[in-house]
Length: 509
Image (cartoon, rainbow, N blue to C red; front, top):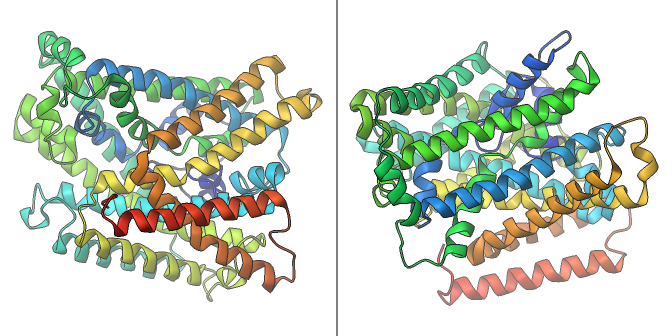
């Protein structure tokens, strides 16, 4: 992110500074590749960047939403097109507006003013720290396979374990340690080896049953759910596993040939989509969706245990644990550096720009982890799970995505000359990418549902106070435009309505 991007353009800058790039769904890649990158290495690096922990849970999560196989395929089709448009949007912006160093924040600010730019930065930061909360639930859920005391990953032992881990990482990062030697290699191996072993085992050991798959195509775990609702129930899952797409653009400057970047981005996107589709479809050929919906996370472990026995579950759970232990270190850096960089750019309050003797952003490190700790404690007293927090995290990143896509769509009409000599392709095609990206972001916001929108409005509301305080510290005017005032009004009204709905029990968290 950069100023706040989210595996985003933000993930890109912020993480690049830290020495690693970590995606919101736990994906991690290493941008520290020196020398020129050919198209093959570009493709593999981008794939590593995007694929994260979400791939291990998506089969069960999609089934738990009540969707049939046909609805799941429809959701993948919609997201395939939508995410491709967002990928091309971030790629084009990196070429056309290279002077906008703040990533997602800069795009929102340049297109729609300082206040919406701030909200983009704020949404990215909250999305990032919520990722850590969701990581902890998935991590200890996987550990429960080996140590049953951790239950579903959200009980008291899990919260204690997660608390110890995140504060240990704060200590490491505060000492100037941004990544352990070889951590990216461990994360990469622990992610991809279990995935490909699972795919290979299901296919070559003939554990895929066409009859089960065909039955799943028409019958979901909730037969009475309307088809459109089935599709929407899976949409946030599909965006979660793609969070980090904007960060892929960060390595574009390392390409041997500039024209390879666009090709590599598209090829990598197609490969990642293929991986997700294989995991999703093959799982539906192993177990009925009604059984998939009942699996504990990571669901792929349950699928493998059903298909090949205990060794399959052990492999997947072990891979998830190693991957997330490393990813959480990377995300400790990422979620503290994004508000630090925002403060450096004059977006957040000045206190967030403070560092210790080691150069670590100590204030944002501590504040971010205090907020994470609050969410971990809240997890004990609610029904919130890994899925709840990643849905919320993905939801918070939608505004930055939406504003970036809207800004890109805007310049395709207002600055068509900016494309000449910087990026190829017909301007009409780029307009389509931008417009579809906007509609896709809106659709995802709708798909997040009443609970998601309710909580998101509550999380955006406190940002208004930080924005005003930051402006006062710098003696700058604030909330002067009609647009800014309207946005503030909408956020506050939605927040008040949300509190009423929660207090009256109409929305249960």
